[in-house]
Length: 304
Image (cartoon, rainbow, N blue to C red; front, side, top):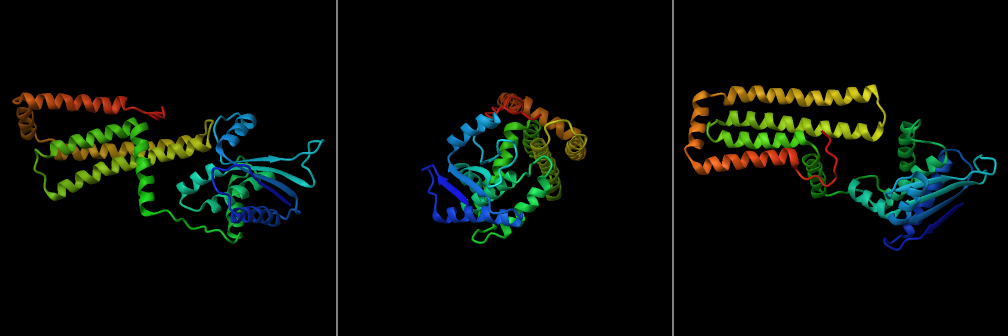
């Protein structure tokens, strides 16, 4: 039996959502070979689930789903009632938009996820098995689309938000941007041919791409590992090593291409003979310093 209640009015809760949640509960119980036990499902908003999250988990922020197993007086799981599930449809809608699939699919996924928690699975010991079961159960629930429906522009937006995150939070990435800009300005004095320009673009891109991957690796590891872990340290060190090697290669390529004493002399002469260019150069270096060292970070988490 599924006792389903919608207590919020911010987002339309459809009959199809109701039907899919009930189907997800029954399908999970069936595939786990559990008798048809009672489950209560509450659809709510971010404000209500935030209060629950703070009360029961001491986390003062909204989450997508919470599960509460039901125990009898002796501390054992109840024989007839499995427990309660609370889903924030607000949070589910935002995640559905981010992942590029329907709200119905996200709600079904959260229901299945919470059901597995009620059945005793957790993220510490059973995470791999949970992912496998979630995928298997989802594939056996008809009426939901497992394909992504995000547009090309949405995908581009997500990619740009990742780059913007690195700009805000990675000092090294900001330094690479400043260095790349400086190289582009100096290149105007050298008259490079097409092949040389291509080498410069490839070298600069490789450094920035490695920095992006390094940030992604660190973020992924930090979400899973709170305490010191030897393998996590190795993964972070290797990704940082990739950034270091690409940066060294860029320096070597830069020496081959830019270490021309006569051209360097002409650059300095051109700048020093013009008060305007001196002022512009000083302003550029000062702006670069502020950009790299003191770029405003609203999230307040400089990784480096």
